[in-house]
Length: 231
Image (cartoon, rainbow, N blue to C red; front, side, top):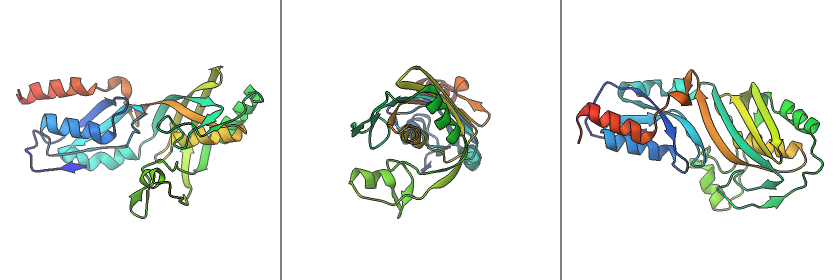
């Protein structure tokens, strides 16, 4: 959360944004803060730079509601590719492994989906914002440090796949707070005795809020600045 001495233009609001590809969640917060002169602003759940989709920002007194949105159920759509891996489980890092895929059948994939649906014990990716010893794991990963990651309990009530473009697999996931979709992709590949990386990810829902109702960042900035009478 960012808090400075600027003058807050209102009592607070909940802002729905479509985070652009390659932007960090902090980039989005910082853009809105500076352009619209909010005193207090924060986001309700990080999206990786290579993910797009719904990002909820809260300003002013509404920042007290951030924990509520962070704890809400999430929905994602995306794509993964079987047969290759990267250390980050997405395209942030180069490929580090290639694996067979000829043995993978629809039945094997559905069995893997079943094992990854419901209440799970999941290991977060080493390239993640999880803190260990007061430092984000991705910083340790980029230095090549070995770390022991503890599993966390998560819930995945919905995990659906479409393999019509195999080895590219489209998916939809509904999950609890703390679920890493990249970990789901990694574990899916491992259950198939192969490998997998995530090529696309979009967050489509947070609780009762949907991406279809979100603003593009520049659209929001333009409208808000006009509302505030800012040149």
